[in-house]
Length: 210
Image (cartoon, rainbow, N blue to C red; front, side, top):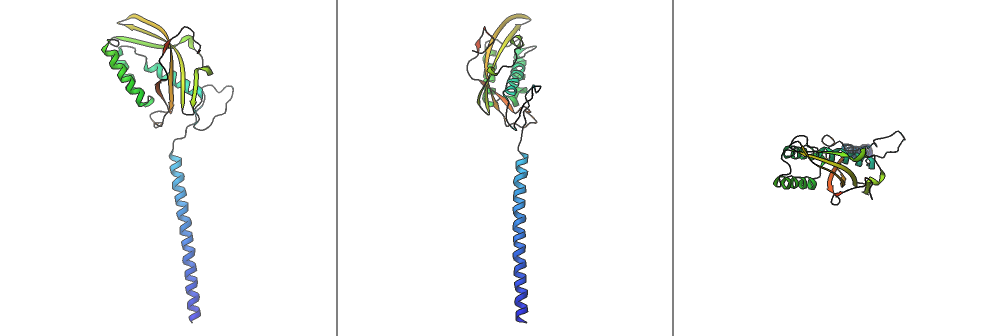
């Protein structure tokens, strides 16, 4: 009788150990699943170059230089297009493009608006920005600082009027910093931001970067 009792106890202990092992394995699977679910929620971007006619190889989360260039052209042009009144259009552009502008550059733009307003350079002024001679992309137009930071060189023609009278048409080279952004794709599908100027913009004669 005693041996039968000991046998039942041994079986029970063995069963308990088996249950503990199963529970431990299930807990491990739950932890791994939780970690995988959190990883899946992280934003993964696949950047496609603007022109794939010649074929290309793309890597997840790698920013092509052509994308950095296209982004800088699109956002900077829109930021500096004031169709009716710079006093209203310029601040409106800064507010509208907030997800595409770094905090430091946004602060610089606000200070620039204040400076120009104090000098009377925005009231009833219009501005358009165009690429000089429809300038095509060139590898020399983008400097790669690292995988998250670029300097894009844009040669642009700035045309301004005041109260309908032409007052400026000048060609300027802008060295624009472009940085990776962690803003939600819902607000910033590019995953990039303008981050100000690498150095002061300068008047140009040639349209090719020196």
